[in-house]
Length: 454
Ligand code: PLP
Image 1 (cartoon, helix red, strand yellow):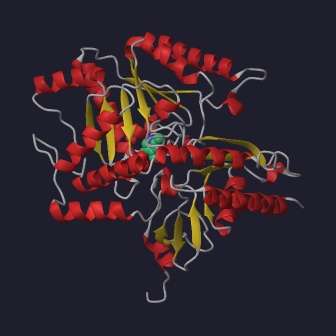
Image 2: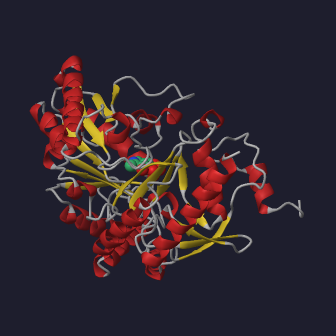
Image 3: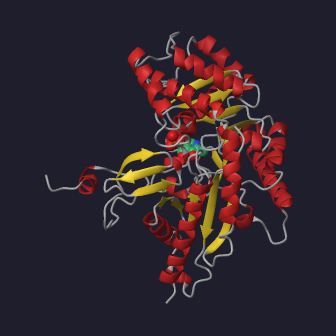
């Protein structure tokens, strides 16, 4: 056992998420040992720019001492408590107050969970509970979109619209309906403007509602900008048209801000960037800079009041998690939000984001690039083998995988989603960091092209 490297021990003992468990990895997984600012280091001491902020989540970078101090203070004072049965603790109160008062639309309450999936799963249960509370026992179906990512528990994965998260799992569950993803370049018809495309998607929503029966639909879930589905920025007028239909049929709108929240799109919330007025907001990831797991659900009165009535009739709300609103995670979240305010990080992210979009756009005419898209500090570069001599030699995903691998060798960690590379660096990144990512990506694309050219 002494001679086994950590990579070999990983291969021996760890089952990885989102991984081919029989992949023939030549060098084992990349084991990350430490982090500093926008960088992480592997065991050999190689440095990488974490251009995905982990999983779209480490907003403040990998070495913020104030978050460590906040966690330590809370660990020493009260390392654990819970909110069940009329109990509570300070960090949860502080965080709930902060979130409810900073929400871009009036919100009544915050409910705490541990992950984005748990939060979305909880919202689905709340919607079913609300429908029962209102005596609308038919109103249980949920609409989301193809390519949406809302998480991975049985219900959240049903919301998710990515085939890889359904295949083999007998998902989605019945009653989860998926609409066309609002990806203009991919799904618009020839000659269709962005506005016309948005109108058509809103009509598709209305047709679905009428076909199913408006009285059977509880809610529409959407990420303001789709993240894991490929950083899909909605076409102009999309959200206002979708909202108009939802309002017409009294269907609630749930904004999944798990990626977009806390500055990612250049405003505090993605809802503000797109004029979305949600009934429910789901928050996680950058909420604590992911130093500890925590997620929050914000509910407006329309959502909360009927639920509260039924809890009063039954005598309890029969739902909650041991770790929900954990005091150490909540303390870290409160400190994260303080730092975002004090350092004006949303404005900084908007400025850095504009720079990142501008610099990435310079790659748009590369032979391997199909589309560069994004908003704020989240972006995607979609590759295509279409202009190569032998496109058939590159099945879907092969080019993306190879590019991500080569980019990693250039010292930049991105994420391949099919043939699309995503970029979502920590919000503390500066122009120099962005320039380094773009330069490494250009080198990578040239290397890829050379490999693919006989
Ligand atoms: N919602 C969105 C928009 C996400 O991007 C994610 C995770 O990437 C989730 C929900 C699920 O969050 P978690 O992985 O914490 O369960």
